[in-house]
Length: 304
Image 1: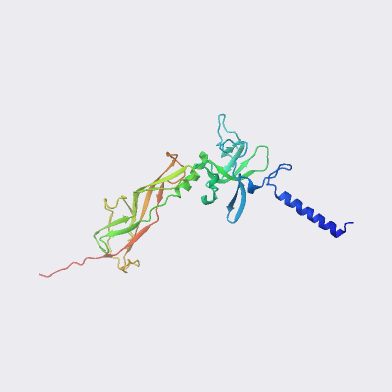
Image 2: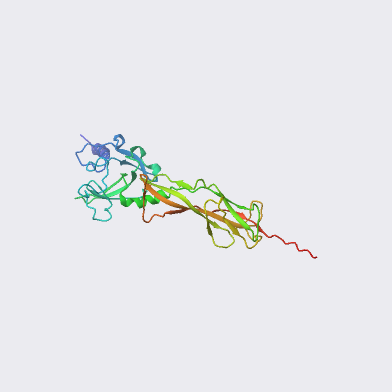
């Protein structure tokens, strides 16, 4: 005969067993469907979806999607889904009407690169409205950017352009004079072209347009031709720098002159230039400069 204590122990063991069995079922599976263990399923990858938060993510397309796992929302007879309800009006995944976080909130170094369908795909969080269901479809997954996503990716591509770490100098070196032509020189500009890494299907290229110069004496900035060695970029200082707080490497006070590079930016997709409304078509480097000491030539007056 079972004592009350023994009955309690048996019921506890049964409860633990049920919790273990139910916990092995992948979320979203209906009763009676064979459980899938994510760790052994090639469709699932263990992913850090936010700092310190890991979960199994299904990277395979759903059965109602085409072979590529994508449906940009168009077909021979138009969209396969209803794109009339915001915000789920960006693209179709099969019959699901979807939106996506563009650019991806997940840094690219955390993407499951080994599962990437093509270089044009990006990995991001997708939300979809499913016909006949109240619950939203929400998943991290690969998508091929749709037309409306390109401006968002354009900002990402723009951010991948890196301007060169140039240095600035002046002539006459070391010390210039009030009323003299002071010429500015820049080193480290390269060939004038910078190319960023791809962001989905987009790539940004910057072509050096001009150089902005701030002489540091309170006068206006001005533009110079990017080839400062063949085309003079000059300024005339009208006062001495002995009261300035900035100092050169030898401790001489001078004007804190600065320069920055300005690039014209173009975007290409598959080698073809594209226009991205709302995305800047210029890029400015950080300011970089040098201290310019300015002295005065003393005139020698002789009595006759």
